[in-house]
Length: 552
Image (cartoon, rainbow, N blue to C red; front, side, top):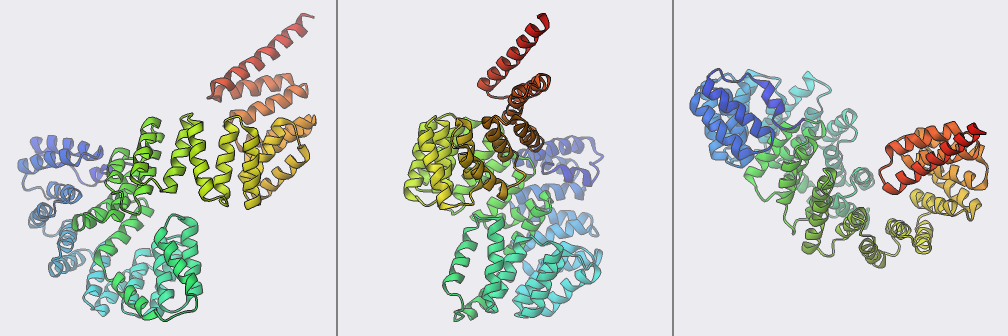
């Protein structure tokens, strides 16, 4: 669902015909991500129906996305004046007031929201954070405890109650609330990180390390977490900076924009894209140079299907930001997804000019050159990475695969062997080398051993099962080959090469009708002209052989 679609269903359109036309045009502009056109149409709708609180709220939301906070504030105030008992109008007004630094007024509005709707989760969360920011921890705790008392499974309630307890340096109740939040959502990165910070401050280094490692396992590119983990490893069991950690924890947990960012991330996790975009837009309106949050906003658009707007936001992340390379790789991936391989290549080439030594960009460029059929250039790039990191098994594997695709089997085998030497558990390299031997009909016992080692790591990988079946085929044990190849087809039913292998085994076992059936199925899914021509030839050969048998 694209952003804006959920909003369209929330309230009925205005009854006035001129306002209705502009409302519909504005909604269409929002759905395609054109904020300027959307603002223009909703401004006309408001002019046609100035007493519609709904239209003013919608226009305010667009102004927030554009960073026009004074204009958004004016529309929110007008909406509240029209409908004083509308909790959502007051919430939006409170959000904008808070973002522009008018915190006393924001608190009054959040409190008004809760008078209208005591169970309003977002109002309670943000009000609690503002109380904590003032140092009024008792009111903050009371405000947030209401949520968890009403709903023991309120993830956000437990999480933010934990943050407030941490800010108040009440670490045991903070830990309890974080752990409760993790029982509700065990993989929540914000909670894992905040609990790790708490353990750091409490000198529980081993537990902090375990949590940071859990975060990195799910998201290896979190360089800030990797740096923090590296620091813990370096000073493990040295606690002379504990006081600084206490102070950092308190500072983070009472930062309102940080709170909005965390709320936005949680909304993104749960698929509430429109609300997440609003939170990130408020942060960016207050701090347009917060490129970390801009990356999150781009992710919202990406995951909600608005690719053009996602690319637009990713492109606004500058080359000197640590996430620039990630942003450019995502742009390239999105372009490739919609069939624009040339555009994807140009994006990475431009990024390399900005960051010529970025190894992740070099890696991405090599992969794209391979997709574009530019194998010598891809090999040259991977050679560069392998020369810089000769002990990186993944780089060795990729370079070996490129050489193999370039018909240089000798170099391909050498790099695969080196990848396995570096990492005996590299299942793709084990399978690749084993299949290479099987394909050439050589060293079949070694090929079987390599492939079985890969299958011990990934037993349900259809490509690995196919490789083992091909070893048996090359030995002439066609019944055993069929057993494995039929299983491979069930595991990777969309792959035409595996189906072709099964057809070959059927043919050699004398099961001509089964071979024809599988060859035809493989042909229907073949995308490479060379394979399609080979399959047609096999089908024709079998049909001619059948015709000759019938004639005799």
